[in-house]
Amino acid sequence: MNWPAIIEIFKKDLQETTRNRYVFLSISVLPIINIIENVFAVSQIINLPSGVAQLSQILPVTSLVVFLIPSVVTALLASTSVVLEKNNRSLEPLLATPITDAELLLGKCLAAFIPAMVMSYGTLAVLIGAIDTVTIGKLGYAVLPTLGMVYQFALIPLIGLLGTFVSLLVSTKIKDVRAAQQVSTFAVLPILAFAALISGIYVVDPIYQIAAIVILAAVVVIVARVTIHRFSRESILVSWS
Amino acid sequence: MIKALSLSRSFGATVAVKDLSFEIKEGEVFALLGPNGAGKTTTIRMLTGLITPTSGTCSIEGMDVTRNPMQVHRNVGVQPEVPGHYDTLTAQRNLEFYGKLFGVKQPQLGLRIRDLLQSFDLWDRRSDAVQTYSKGMKQKLAIIRALLHDPEYVFLDEPMSGLDPVASKTVKDFILDLKAKGKTVVLSTHNLDDADQLSDRVAVIQGGLIALDTPDNLRANLFKRTIVFHLKAADDGVVAKLRALPFVRSAERSENKLVLEVENPEEENPQVVDLLVKAGYRVQFVGEVRHSLEEVYLKLVKPSQEAPQ
Image (cartoon, rainbow over all chains, first blue to last red; front, side, top):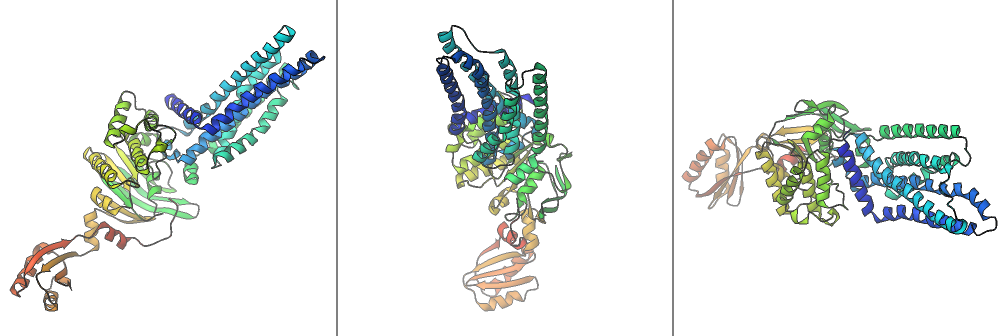
């Protein structure tokens, strides 16, 4: 693996993303809305007579919204990074460099995955801090993080990877940036549903939780292989020109 | 050396390139000429390992391009037909990105970028986003990108497209400079004057190979040598006298000019001049008509339907 080239592709894609106002706004709005919405909900519930009891029920669901970020952000970034290459017609000179398909894809994956992870864990940290600030003020103690959230933390990278590979797969077939983003976002919905299902609310037994992580990891590997296999430089050059 | 042997490439039912064979020597400037859809871009893509041939083989320095595309990419620079830059990034950042992918280390990369940008008059605009560049500037930047890693083989697909005359001259001088440095340059072009000025040999393709030779040999093979005699005064009587000469293939008069097709002007022109002077005609100028590569091309290439590039 040519790691300097992979890191260079990652850095270039990241620079392009941050200069694309449309994409940058799309991925920035999601965490902000999540934090405001959840903190507001907790601050309202905690004032109810049965607030503490209700809080213990909604907290796992509150942290669940963080799953939205790795899936949607990777969908937006990964699909955009490939389709922008199509629109700029920049793929031909890129493929004329001594990099393999796997190195190119890995660079593009990192450019979607790493920002999504930073945003997911960053949002989670801010969310935990904000909710705890509210509950400490009212109840005198912090309610987050719960033990169940540790399992959810472990799921975030897998959801991010799956979202990245599914989006790359989608974007190799679609020529328009917005269409690629829409289809990718739609395609990650089943991932989100599956993640919610195994997130610790319905599956609470640690053995089942580990099994769910293994299954998700296996799905990530399969989808990654399909994506690399489908990412044929020749078909891309011929069909995209 | 670049070798293409029976190269063919189809896209579905459409045959873009059929049974193309040629060799390109080291240090040669080789032009691919042909109408739109003739298969020039497809040929360049096959030669540079971007797409695989449906049948046939191509090699660079004895290395099979299809089997060793990564090694080939290290040794070739490609300027595609569409520049394909990252428009939101600066020119310098675009070049740094590609330089690093080609494994050029700093400080050599920085020096190389500076030298090339200065050669193409883009140094002062290096910090501007490429989206602010004109079409010609983008084209020059694409050529610079192809040369960053100092490749031995340079493939230029329509390099003069979109360039004004000054920029076009810069690029042409640069191609000649590459040749002087012993680099092999393969260019596809619609501009036949450019091909005539720059190329050691040209391949005229239209699906398959129609002709391959030096521009001068192509002219000589397709056209008889034509000589024009400018007289102070001419009449039809002189034309009849000239047609009677055994080595004159044809003779026409246009006002005071006589246009003759002959086999060997070096030997035969003095005899014609002698005849004209003895017959009382005053010869003002004698010159050879040089057929343009465009005339050669038009004689070789038939109008056809466009095929995918």
